[in-house]
Each structure stands twice: as structure tokens, then as C-alpha cells.
Image 1 (cartoon, helix red, strand yellow):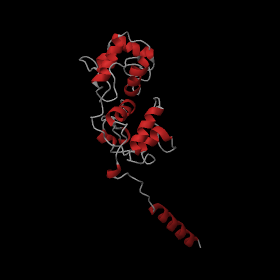
Image 2 (cartoon, rainbow, N blue to C red):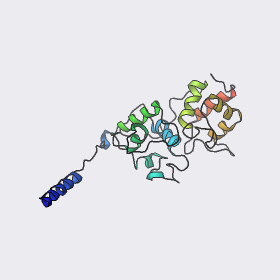
Image 3 (spheres, one colour):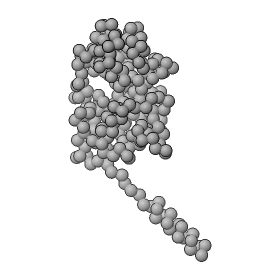
Length: 224
């Protein structure tokens, strides 16, 4: 009797463990992308700002086997085109499942706008839009802090500069951004001038975005 039960248990175990289900991956011909989303402009900055800090998912640390510094590397692991539920990266930043480590570690989570962009990008095929759209939707005369400057800082800077102890200090809030603007560090970094750090690392802001910041600083770096 005992032997029979053991065989029954083993047979059930083998059947369960041999039953695998392949998750859905969107076919190449259906990956049309979301026309309102540009990978270079909207998606890559999310990864660079929130995921590639020191000892995280950059080319040096390669933590967890993830390098998230360009499209090719991002697509190697954790993104399943057309299927957010099977995308480990989406699980880690949005779903808070018990078996997946929440990201970013020791930093603010992605905001609702960033999560929505990432979700729609994956669902529409996770395509690389190329550089053609990277400089669109930019007005060099949009230089108020709230409408022009804060969105740039939020997109490209806050992931790394989220506390006073972060390298380079905090850029959360107007006062911190103004201080960086007044002492010349903000423009020096984003313009990639000699003697400054290239910021954001791995990305070059468009000429329009740099002009917006320069005009804002020239106008007094106001909280407007």
C-alpha cells in the first residue's frame, strides 16, 4: 500500500513539474509601438535615472544580471514584448509581488506617469523608436519652472539625485534645483562642459532642453 502511494505521489509530482506553460510574446509583425511614446525620449530616461546608479544595473555592477543602459541591453532580460505580466522588470517596479524584489532599492518608486509610459511601451511591443522622435515635443520658450524645468529634472535627474547624501546632492524640489542652477553646476553638467560631469549619464539632453534650462537660469531661475 505504501509503495503504491509513493508511486502515485511521484507520478503526480512528475506530471505537475513537467507541465510548463510558455508565456505570450507579441510576434514581431504586431509590434507597432505606441505613436505617442518615443523610447529615447520617454523610456530610456526612466531606466537611466532610476536603475543605472552605482552598484545597480549598469555595465559595471550588472546587478542581478541586468544591464539597463540602452535598448539592446534592456531587451536582453526582464521585458516581454506585449506581456507586462511576464515582464520581470514591470513586476519589480509596479506589481509588488512577493517573489520579486521591489525596485528601485532605497529610492522613490516610479511615479504614475512613468509607470503608465512603461506599461504602454511594453504592451505595444517594446520597440526602439530610434532617434527621430527624441527631440520632439519641446518648446525652447517653455521656461517656467513648473511647466518646463521641473519635468526635465523629474525625468532625467530625480532617480539619482533623490537625497542630500546622493552623489551630487539632491535635486528634489525647487530650492535644490535653484541652488544647482545658480552655482552653474546644472548647466555645466547637462551641457557636458569640460570640468563637469556628463549628466544624465549615458544620455544627452536635446539642444532644446538645454536651451530651456539656460533661458530659465538667465531669467533668474524663478519658481514660476
